[in-house]
Image 1 (cartoon, rainbow, N blue to C red):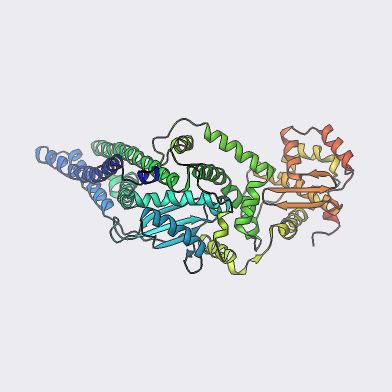
Image 2 (image 1 turned 90 degrees about the vertical axis):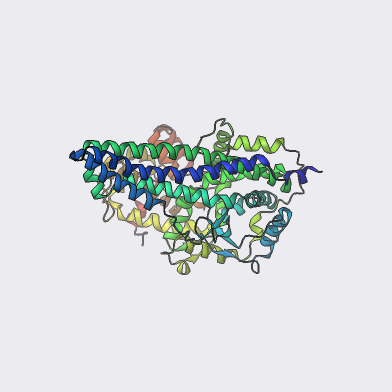
Amino acid sequence: MDSVTEALLPRRSLAGWAALAVVMVVCSYLVAILLAVACVYLPYLLVENVSGNIQVWAVLVCGIVMAGTILWSLVPRRDNFTPPGPRLEPVNQPQLFAELQSIAKSLNEPMPGEVYLIPDVNAWVAERGGTMGIGSRRVMGLGLPLMQMLSVSQFRAVLAHEFGHYYGGDTRLGPLVYRTRAAMVRTLVNLTSPSGPLRAVTRIALARLAYVLVTGGLKAYWALFLRATQLVSRRQESRADELACSLAGSQSLIDGLCAIQKASTAMTAYWQTELAPALQAGFRPPIAAGFAHFVEAPAVAKALSEALDAELRKTTTNQYDTHPPLPARIAAARALPYSRQAENNDRAIALINRLDTLEQELLHSRFPQLNTAGLKTVPWESVGADIYVPNWKAFVAAHAPLLAGLTAGSLPEAVRGLADIGSRMRDPKGTLLTREQRTERAAALLWMSLALALIDAGWHLHARPGECYLGRGEVRLIPAGVIGEMRSGKLSPDAWSARCEAAGIRDLRLDHFASSGAAT
């Protein structure tokens, strides 16, 4: 029997872990139901023996309300699945579905009924719809930025990992655990955010004590349930990693995990600092290509590498984590006897057709209130001139009087007076800013005015995701970075003066732009 065939054999140990998860699910409902019964029955016994005590009657009322809350929270809810993005169809995506079908065939697993493109550095599989898993269907989500960052070989490893959850039966068990967690959360939320009658009755000391004991007991069991089920989840993830290594090669999985870790760290910053300003200005640059530029920008790439190194140094596991720590996953993959598979280093995004249309649909799915059809498509190379510069001009022109007499050489003095400048800037309409926020706006005013003055003097604006600087010849300058370094003390007035002399911008007027009417 070869190593790949052996890897595909069922694992008895995993069956044991799955049984533990089922036991925890059953116990969760039993504990909650028995607790609800006790909430009514024990106070009822007290009332029979001490019927005239108002404290005892208050405990009975409290118990009845808590029991009703618990039982109502346990009632299974139907899983109303909302598509997380545009649905991918085999007829439109033959290359992608060929990869999916290849992995499914290797594991002798049916294809997922629905495959969606999602805006995350992630891929997942699930059984969605129905009630408690009954009547559910197989669903898969594939991240657009994930496919942009991974090679085809790495993407195959990720797909094999996700199909491994189907193969191991994790997705059939998942709805039970998920719905139980949801029921426990509902119970705790409903009890810890009590209704009017429950708040009124718990003002009585004995009823309050009963309430504290019940909620405390539920929280303790909830912590135990989470720890046990997350331990099972980590075992399942390790098994899915093993299957991925057997089908796609250990090195492809390791490289893919590292790439995902780095890209996940960058995704939020990319959306907030690069994509959101463009969308707000009415433009739609390429999402996937922009993310690739962002993570490859020198400063960003350095920060991501440092973050990955820090993650790889971690040695402990949080008991509530759903996945083993990255170093443990990599070590386990390296220890498996699976040789490197034939590699395809093309980007996995090449498997996607109609990318521009899908990106528009993805934006509409994430921001349904946004008129995505009305957004103007623009390449990232034009974002600086079409978006940044007009925004800078509008902001600087609105506060032109505050820049009177300011030159590049006098910036250090202006930075020392940022708080005063900020106090004289009007707050945005309908917003009351803090002192710190006003100071930040003043800093933005300074670096924007410097940027515009340099552009007016013939400097070239280089703006791509993760990079924004002005250059002339061999000289480069990042206006926002200059102001930031002055504020932190990293750039002294003398050092800035020397840089101004070398660049020939000491007397460059920062109020020239505003006073010349260039803002129009």
